[in-house]
Length: 291
Ligand code: ARG
Image (cartoon, rainbow, N blue to C red; front, top):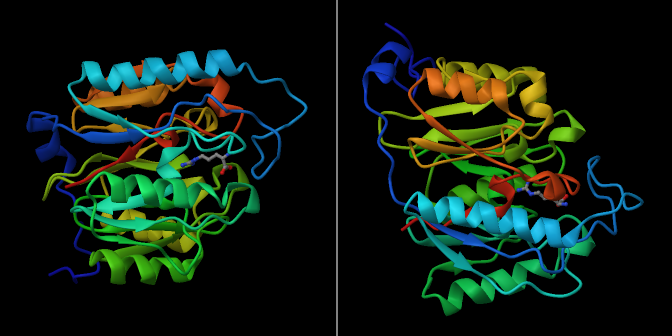
């Protein structure tokens, strides 16, 4: 008999493949990149000397938003603020599970003011249960809800103590993971959830972005996970957004798209090259509002 620790939370791949992929309707929060720029560097992708085409960023963001809407999802939009060029990365603004919101607290001073703009949005949009954290946490950048546990990253941005705070505030079990490669500074640059239905949890990740112990944890919990190649990781291919069937990915992540198609998912490719100059992809621009 296997121990509880060894019991995977996902079903065997054979069973998964037989099951039809069912999308579920999602509600997302996004922020148009009208004030997008790369004027400081807080991750290795950002080079302030490299020009950014702000109009192209808006066009790519709009195409991403329209892709969600075509898939039948609801997209809420928050007003961007001048002087907060990274506010487009809505995923960093909080974590919402069952209508409960844990707000963000940013590591970099340059992004600190974003947290309060988003806090006010949540309150104005009838989220009554909004808690602002005492520990640094960059929202869904480092928290991924699998449907059963909250995977939580640390190493570059989110304070490991924020993992316990998230567990207490959201009332969900948290699994701590340590990131070790500065290019994959947020959990959502190295891992994403493909299927969050109870008993069907499936994820994709890039093992090399994690410490040896964290890799082992992921192997135990998700023995049939999709493992991404270095090439697919390097275009931020793991910064995907799945509704359980349709998976929005950066257009360059062709190997990952093939792996997902083989498992019955429908890849939806988007060009997000301008936002990648800041270290962001589709997921970074997207906060899921659950419940
Ligand atoms: N320039 C932003 C930063 O370094 C990018 C954030 C990307 N967001 C994400 N969820 N990974 O903070």
